[in-house]
Length: 549
Image 1 (tube, rainbow, N blue to C red):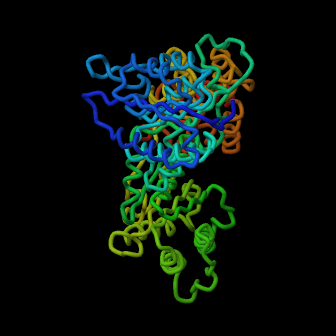
Image 2 (image 1 turned 180 degrees about the horizontal axis):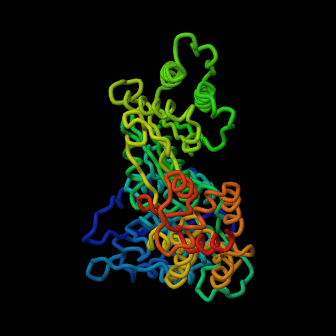
Image 3 (image 1 turned 180 degrees about the vertical axis):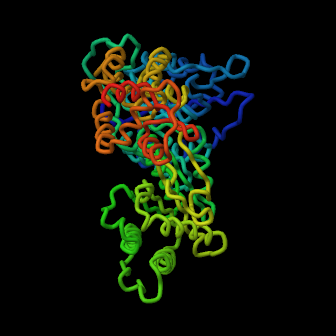
């Protein structure tokens, strides 16, 4: 079935707002949907029926009575427990995802779109999408205003004879235009029509239709990805900090732990506030630029200006006869960047620890960033600048406590996924309730986001069984071979670092290392640090490097 609604579409609006929980503005949402379709030039092609205060027994009755093609549910949801309906007594009654999916399967020949405008309903949407062609769910908590904006955009588009994909995009865009930082919350899932597949070989139940929509883990998690897992409130802290004048956010985590994924979401939130947002990756800068402070700061000014489509006046503005490099850069930012834009600027600097080995640059540059942050407390011009720094570990070159940005602003340290976060990610890969699988996987890779997601991808896609994955994990035939080899290639040219890692993996207790060795091994994500002592981050690293070093 195509993504374009056919003539005479019947829409059923269901709502449930049981007592004992926060009350939603469901009537307003329903009115907005009806009003939008009433004004649409294709209004004669739609009919709308409503069922309010829906009890769990009312769902199938309403579908049988009205025979809808599109079902819209407004209400409350829970991440894994299901959607909240009313019981016979008007209290809360949870209906889980599998039960909802089984119900909609019975009406799959009739219903071609389901919209679950409820918090955390993506989990239910994933199950329903096995049977229904188009399903919209919410990846996290969604506020009343955002839910209403999405509904308005979605049904206005249908009323203009647009297809479901366009309607979904318009709904998200209206959230964004309203200045609400929730435009990434709605997720559109499509049923995949495919030949019957062989039963999964892993020994664990896997939703194979979900596996067909998987993304191979490669670099940061895209903004549009349904596989991004939030970090227990860290995102909210960052978003709240970002709107404060002159703010500074410091994201710290080893490689492949999600720094860039979080950084890009902070920048996206800034864009939603109509801020200018610039992302610079220091990992890609030429070494010839890094070894000279003046050249590096000229590069910085030029790149930021280019990203903002401002004229490059670096050569004309740089006054080397009177001002030092830091003063030139500061003056340029104030006059030729901040003064030229009419909104705050969010400057996201990724992999700033790339500068740490270059003593000619590191102290002056980071001292300048700290001074910008301090200026933001008193200067209207500098209040417009919001800094977001991402780094793998602390600088191993001592910086003056008053000149370092690493002891100012709001620190954010990304930890490994906990058990619940791994379960959430497994659920998104079609593995609901596979606690045994999750525990076996965590025993090998811990909660390392990249290692966990790579394993879940291969298992869900049917490329490997868990048993084979664990047996081959540390070998050249395993799914981690490229990752492990790249780490070995970094260690081998540095004998003292390779020896330090060998010492760590062959010890059953935490090992004491010098600060430089700890810095390098921790930034690579190879070890957990406890003061001056370290231990392997996970069993995978222990077994592999014990074998090859």
